[in-house]
Length: 447
Ligand code: NAP
Ligand code: HSE
Image (tube, rainbow, N blue to C red; front, side, top):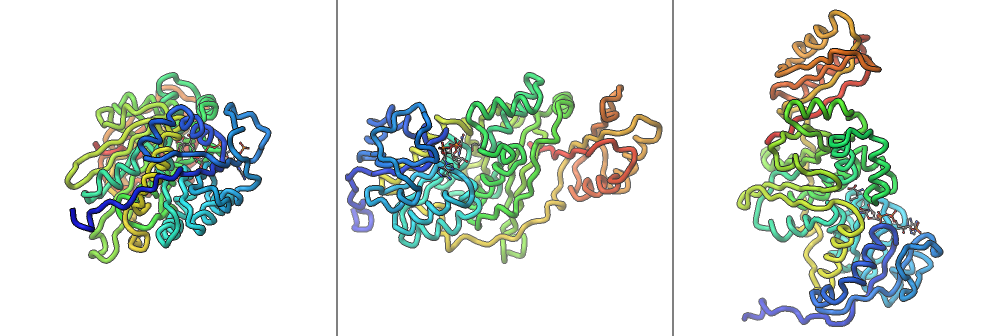
């Protein structure tokens, strides 16, 4: 063995954790460590000890025994405690106390493991630089797709591949809602309440249903897959609030299911090779029933990446909840214990490329359009005229026989064409008195 190939001496001292946040995920981590301590420590090659914990309310009964751990009075105490080697941030929020804690820990050379996709999507590039310039490790496996090891899968397992597209079902709460609406016909509000009770939803569930949480995850996946700087503000976002049971039924009749999908595409030569062009979007989409994402239901997530040597890779598993998320957090803790210092975004943060934002209107897609219209002569002609004037070709059209609360529903599927043309058609109809509600447009994911 040459000198360069010699493994570094292994640190066998216990790895001492300070955990901030004792909610769904924090408690899950304590339970996992309690139950799987022996195998986790054997894999880590050293003991893993929780030395201090912190949350807002010390008196709250969390269903776990906190007596063995010191209670840190402030989050800052976890970063400054000389007995803490690794800070585990499970509080949440893009800024505020979570960010201050991560910065304080990294500045002191301590590692940070976090499940906080909002923080990584907004500040991941800077935190990665802090980590690489002498700080401790920074790891966020649990931030994307809950229990699925997709970060390490892409960073390590797919390291030999150029990736041009990464997409998938990235929010368990929305997927749970859409698949419950599909299977039981339950309404939106009822299913959201269930997802909250099951511990899937964010502290503010609007992040889930408005697509923001999926966008946080997509921005992280893009950076990791394409070697570009995290660009959360560049993600075009639309959530699932406008999707109705009737859309799900129409989609079903046409051979599709409805899912909230995040898609990122990179075009490395899009600007003559100077800067890559990146297109990132989160939207409810129609998925052909024969697509591998179509059967993904409940809080399951799935991420698909297309590698130039590996081909289509699909990572699937529980995307939210106590156990799966704790599993991902513990994977990161074990990696830190083993001394893994892979750059958080696979390449050094200083070398992440700035990408231009691509024009989503230029994309060619088939689309589903749903209109609520007044039940009177000439309305269909007005809709089809707008399509004609915007150069949108209609593949099929279904009109409901009966009027509902807000008029008659007309659903269309278009032939493949520029997305900008569909937007133009909708704009042409914007102030039409024939429309009794906001139209809904959902792209159809290609197989
Ligand atoms: P949670 O159940 O709401 O727990 C949050 C914890 O943080 C609570 O213990 C809370 O204290 C504590 N906390 C909140 N604000 C605080 C503050 N200002 N100072 C000190 N402590 C504070 O949230 P969670 O579901 O465990 O999620 C935690 C993180 O994991 C978030 O970043 C989330 O996005 C991420 N995540 C969650 C899941 C999931 O399935 N739940 C999956 C993947 C990633 P109290 O308990 O005293 O109120
Ligand atoms: N609220 C998130 C979801 C938790 O529903 O997917 C997992 O990141």
